[in-house]
Amino acid sequence: MSEPGDVEDLLRELAPQVLGALTRRYRQFDACEDAVQEALLAASRQWADDGVPENPRAWLTTVASRRLIDEVRSESARLRREQTAAALAGLHPEAPSPEQASSVDDSLTLLFLCCHPAVTPASQVALTLRAVGGLTTAQIAAAFLVPESTMGPRISRAKQQIRSAGARFELPAKPERSERLAVVLHVLYLIFNEGYTATSGDDLLRPDLAAEAIRLTRMLHRLLPDDSEVAGLLALMLLTDARRPARTGPGGELVPLAEQDRSRWLASEIGEGTALITAAVNHPPLGPYQLQAAIAALHDNAPDPASTDWPQIAALYAVLAHIAPNPVVTLNRAVAVAMADSPQAGLDLLAGLDDGPLAAQHRLPAVRAHLLELAGDLDGAREHYRLAARRTASNPERRYLLARADRL
Image 1 (cartoon, rainbow, N blue to C red):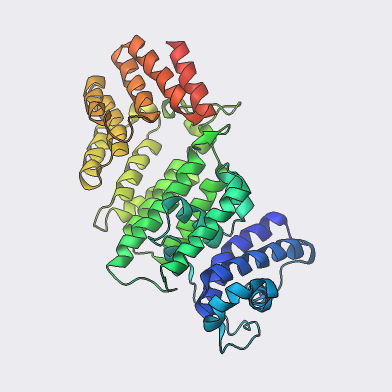
Image 2 (image 1 turned 45 degrees about the horizontal axis):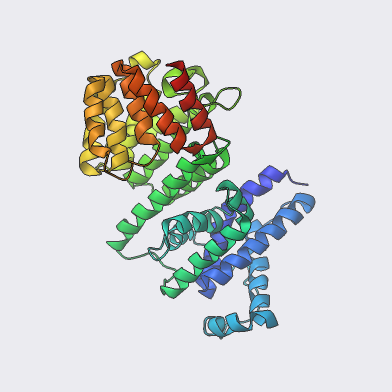
């Protein structure tokens, strides 16, 4: 009998490999993805009791292929059979043997396919978690706090959009590949951020999502070891996730960076992330994930808040604002400038965000409240902490912001 956790880890590792092999052979991503999901469910039940087979990838490939053939043959799949007949015509209706299954790791191709520009960003995240991460629809729905009946159609629409766009199971040609890789990295970054700071609900952290994002980014780094932005994103995730144990208190309350017990930070992740970013910045061009990882490394390697090199962090944010300008960068830069120069200098930077996309969100008044507090304007700080609390959908963040206001 195998341990459930070990089986789950193995299935997540094998899921994109098996799906890639089937999609390369049958050329029907949506049908193959459904078949692989059924095979994963069968394996999770059978392997936990009977043990992992000698060749688990071949087992999954065989079972998924049989499911696919059965689906095409079934009466209930008559309409789908009309669409897939051309793709399956001429193929012997037997599951491919382990020797026939592709020995190539198609995970990278699969990532590009899930992040196809025809698919909306929210659906790219969901489809990546299901097809590449091996998560079930129920797990993804639970992670994003929506009913399974909502997430299922979203994933189905994403697969239909990929089919309608005529996407082929192959790596895009340059220069499209570089553009699509940026989308892949952004999707992985979104998954990690939702795990590290949940946008809604009772829990600040969703460690399973953060861990999945790190796992998928590790896989991408193995496939593209010379890409410095991939290394930068992995370093950023590790350096950020290293603070997770100290980020919440005993009751799940938010603990800000300056008040965290740094002895609880994960030294192994800090070491790995620092080594990754140190190597990556020596291989230009310098990208936004490398810059953010370099900033995270400065925070993580400071023994205490007073030792933080704020002038260097502010300088790195200035470079980041130049090569990848966006309101969130400006928001973070304002904090660094406030710490390195003066609170008023940071507040001056925030003034340019009042008419932008952050104007109605909670992060802008939260940062403004913090800088007003540093500047000694306690009435203004209290007002903006309460405004931010009204706007956030995260219960831990709301409690933290109200507590800051009450303390003033």
